[in-house]
Amino acid sequence: MIYDGHAYCLPDLAGAGGFEDPADFRRHLQLATAGMGHSLPPWRASNRTPADTRGLADLSKGWGFAALKDAEFRPGTQGRFEWSVDGEDFVKQLLPPGIAAMSYPAENLVADMDYAGIDRALLQRTPYLGVGNDFVAECTRMFPDRIQALAHVEEWLIAENMQASIDKVDRAFCELGLSGLQFLPMFLDLKGNGGDWAGPEFIPFWDAVAQHGVPVFFTLGPRGGTGVDGYIAELRALRLWCERYPEVGVVLTHGFSWRDFRDGESMSLPKALLDAAPLDRPNVYLQLVLSVTLGARWAYPMQQFRDTLKLLVDRFGVETFMWGSDQPFETLHYTYRQCLDQIRGYADILGQDGVDAIIGENMARLMSEAHQ
Image 1 (tube, helix red, strand yellow):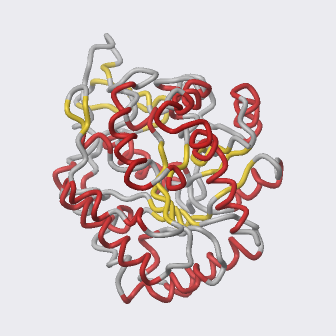
Image 2 (cartoon, helix red, strand yellow):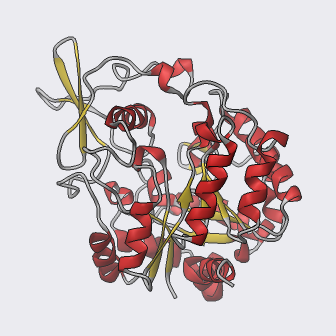
């Protein structure tokens, strides 16, 4: 089986995205457009010359709504978002231009999977692509043999309303039949400090998740804008979390923050990073989502990643890794099929059994165990 562990279906990004107030969804999209590193650089609408996103947010204030500026931010068409500063219009290609209606329904994902030769995909979650679990649950109902999906609970609401958050967890797994939880610690700080996700105050929430026997997909980043040191601190927090919940499957989405460790045509992962990452523990996996995270820098087939991959496989073993595409975002840089073939191209490092494990077997095993 070929199992894409990192794909998306998108509601209408010009709509409410599951939020009660569409303006809240727009704020999430504006923050993402200002800060996402894997989309294309913005340009001036008048002449297509390069621009920047400083008119959208002052990210020196940290990752949160306090950083946003009044810029008449708005969705366009063909995967673009637009804004205006001092009467000048700017454009950023956040999604591939084929996303004409600013949505990507399950039918489109499955058609792309068929074309690329992919058997199954897991829908990931992030607030700027919509909240609420009903949309992705409907995607899985439409294609139960092809699509599984992760639940999401708004991180910034957990500490202030623990019981409501636990109720969302229970409904996601008991009623909607979702297959795991997506958790993004950076979003705790959207409206101020949202608490220590690995600390005592979150134990009731994590206990509720753990009792359902589903994996948790963590998307880590440095909280407070503290760079590599902050990212490594989050990995250490995850290690402590894994010690508290050793029976829970854990996936580090996207892999490491690869761009932070790239130096020209090579990459160097510091010892502190490798020591902090809990990949030596059972039930902990690292996603290889490379076309999005590095594709804007390194062209297919990304030979520059070979030494890093060998280092990781030698240290942790092929059973630790899973492939994901970030479909449809990765088609800003690679085709869907190239994204898969890139892993196959590392067969001399991985061996054919290793390739098979990474492009499907490891993921299929984890997700089937979650439904036993």
